[in-house]
Length: 314
Image (cartoon, rainbow, N blue to C red):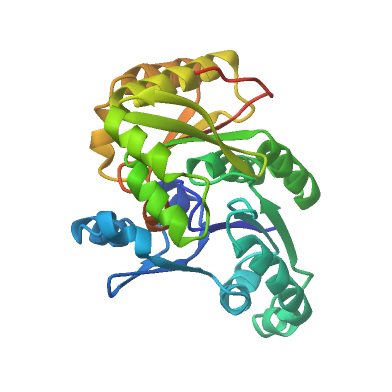
């Protein structure tokens, strides 16, 4: 059975990983200050966004995830002919309508795929499996990595879906923004009042950075640090300890809202890479999606891994 993978563009995984494994990306349209970007994880488009220096004004951006009709066209025009089963992974349903859109689209796809496959000379049924990664950005990476690993080892669709859902339920995504004022402005634009004006003001005045966690469909602060560089080291050190303790998936995701070399120059990065190398864990580095940057600001750092349930203390 030919099994493929489709992901939401806000799932931060490397472009090389996408290309090597034939992963389809369900794009997000981003409109900011008269500019339109197709967020499909294309590095050229991400660089165009960075070169336009729209980061400071991105809080006013409008984002449009793939619609029900977009998903239908992607599958009926391409996926049902290339694969016999596709597992679709999206960022947490509580933060984006894309998961619901894919679920709705699946009804029409499963109803109309037969004539398309027959015209292409393909017999047999087509299956879809939709999984909410219950995380965002790099936090979705472990679920995507595990889906590919299971496909490569020849696992059937039902076991694949169950395993990926288990990984999603045990994936931890951590994020640290650079600019609390930006984060508050974006939250206000979206009607989310979780970042108050006072916390934004104090955070900037004292250079306090929140450490946010995406876990099991919820996002919440779990700590705070003084200074972005110190915060990055704190997250890198914590991730290295989790790697040494053992992960459920031998992959750790990093994404950064800017030039990856800037991330690699942060204190603690090289210690994390050594820990991953020693443990046989693949380090998956990628630029943050355009969607991620307009929602949390340029320069944000996110980390994702899957592990047994634990309490993190920062």
